[in-house]
Amino acid sequence: MNSHYDVEQSLTSYKMSCSITLSFHHLPLDILHGIFHHLDIPDILRIRRVSRYLNGVTHRRDVWSDAYRKANFVRPPGPFLSQSAHDLEHALVPSFRVDQNLRHGGGTTQREKPTLKLREIRYTGVDLCVSLVFGRFLFIALSEEVRCYDLNIDASDRNSGASIIYRSTSRALRSFRCVSAIDVEGRPFACAVLSETTRTSFSAQETTHISIYSLNVTEPSEVALDLLHQFEYRAFVIDAVDLGPRVIVIQGRMGLDVDADWRLVALDVHARMQFLLPSFIDAAWEATEMLEWDEDEITPPTSISTSTHLLLARSFYTQAVGWNTFLQAFTLPHPNTHRHFAPPSTPLRPSHRGIIPGINVRDSVLLHDAVLDGPTQDVLITVCVHAFEPSRPRRHLSRYGILRLGVASREELGTVAFKLLGSLGQLSRARMPFLHPSFNGAGRAFYTIEPGLYGIVAALEYDVRGGGGGNDDEPEAKVIEYPSILRFPTPRTLLDYDPYSGRICLRSAMAKYSVIEVLDLAV
Image 1 (tube, rainbow, N blue to C red):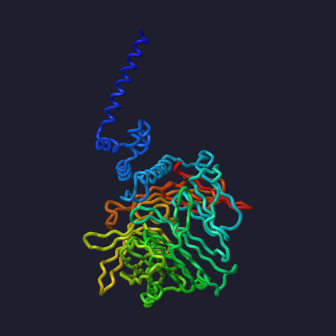
Image 2 (image 1 turned 90 degrees about the vertical axis):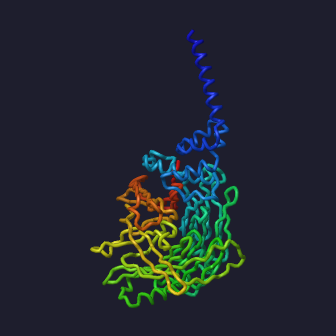
Image 3 (image 1 turned 120 degrees about the vertical axis):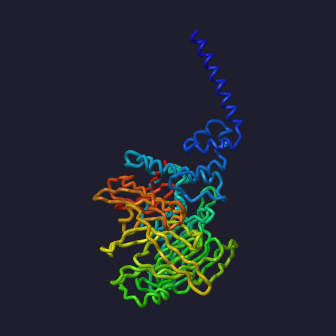
């Protein structure tokens, strides 16, 4: 009797489940979309395993664009019309996993979580640069070649070794810089800047050949260099490379002397258009000649590139008023999508100019792309700068604020103003925080702390968008600090990281070779 009763119950449950499944599968897509709106990311991933029909629904773009909009964690800018459902899912899921690991102590020690280590790379020789691009490709530049590792290929795979994307022949590689950004339509892109000379020893008479490449990823995982522009300078030393949504800016000196002539090259990566700028150094000298500033307290020029403007700034110190910053802005022409074999040159004239008291913009970083203030039509740009306490004018404190570019006319240059809004937590106590540019006002930074013989990796998340993403009356930034997400028995050097995928590159000291560890916080 009991057995018969159990069978009847099972049949009844089966029929109910079938009817529920059948009715659920026949729900209109707009109703299903309303249901999915209340699901979090793990639920969306789990529900696709229920049936083929629901699997198809979870691959719809509107499901992931809706999940993207209501996500409350750090993620890449989006959603954009150019992004497919696949693009949105593969950008959102790793960011969610990193957020969950940080919030719930996912990374504690290497012993407790060995799966964090994605790859360990050993090599001999001195590297010129180590860069992580798109959270996937690791570039290691040596004196004779540049190696590229695809971190998405399992380490046990026979194809997981390095591919050589550059090998020196008649020239010597002096420097290699690889930078990445996100364009105005949400597409990630990257550029590489190579500096080469014909001699093995650098001299003041040596001609330096600089090449700018875009990085193109082909199937399945090949990286190709596409030449954008080349130029030559005598004894040119690259100091900084800045990449924004459109423009790459290369700064350097004509020689090894700190006081050597300064040069700048600006190129629209997408239009392959070089911008010709008037001498910024001369403009800075002219604007500050009446101020008695200390020649030993002047910073190298700094560039910040947005989707609409190119900013050049230089800070100097005076005994009377402390630190001041001369800033000059250039309005970028409308984007040109045509490609040319020879990049055209377009002269730019300053659109805004001014002196900002109380800040130092050395190593300044863009936190939010330029937005238009509706009531005034001013351009608002959120940046991270160095500010100072009145009682301790030599102590650097990292702060963020809004740079306001007033409306310019053909007859007069626009005004420049700056308002400090707040601090960025732990990074406010660091002299040179390791921040990557952010174009949507939210980001994540990883940094190392070395108390004694131990190595600690910490993290910080910030959101400076407030309510309107550009209003200079917004409240203090939302900052979450994770003071110890990874702990090592020996010190580690942070080489690079991807703020969204949670992959971190660290170097550990060895006597006979170099070791780079790539950790993945999105596991």
